[in-house]
Length: 302
Image (tube, rainbow, N blue to C red; front, side, top):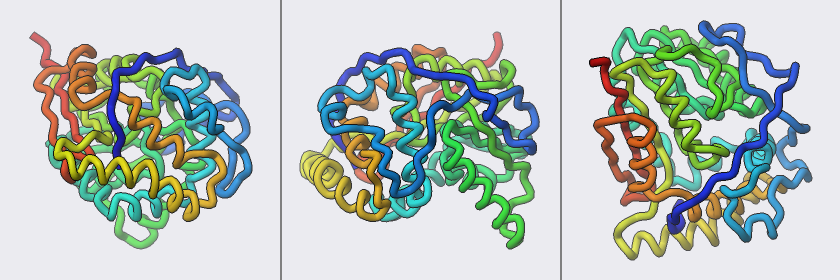
């Protein structure tokens, strides 16, 4: 699900703080959460996050992008996983398993999954049996689904014996002390952040020396026939079918191809990771380059 990548300029995000913010009580080490603002829209809601004229330009340059993204994900939360499976042809789960593999998770590691959504990658990390996994997201409706899935897994006995919890949080203002985690992941979320460079700096801050940053994001296939098919599918087919499945009126699946086509390409993303201070940056194209996995390592103290 791809578009053409171009350089991008970012506007400051719009954030607010609310007494409704509530970290997961089961999440050790949290000191609060970045907040949400505005009324949430449920599945099938008429609340339009993105209008056609707003999608005509570069969506990443909008100061109201964070709030629009939050409203958008609130609207599609209930059908999010189904759309991910169907429109990636079930490849999204394979991409997440690959991300866990290259993170080299050990039994004493503490993992932070940023922009965790409904918890797909969080759960994948839990299966690797680290010491602890925490998922953070700024959309309550997504976290509600993630928490419900955790309860079902525990009741069925299928949950790994790993501390797994969820909390509300903002990628650009993480509520954790310096050097709190050994692995930090973000899957298809860095593109939705208001200030990616600020988020990368936060990721660097909360990782311990030797900690691994793992980013999954859409990319442009290098092989021309695959690229043409991917662009047609993402811009023409998927917005229609995904909207039908989700009964979405927020504009989420029109935003997706625009957000991909105007975001950083893989080389620019790798450079952003290096600029944040990470070393040993590696990238792996997945599914013919439709997706790219990027890993960076926080240098050990000298």
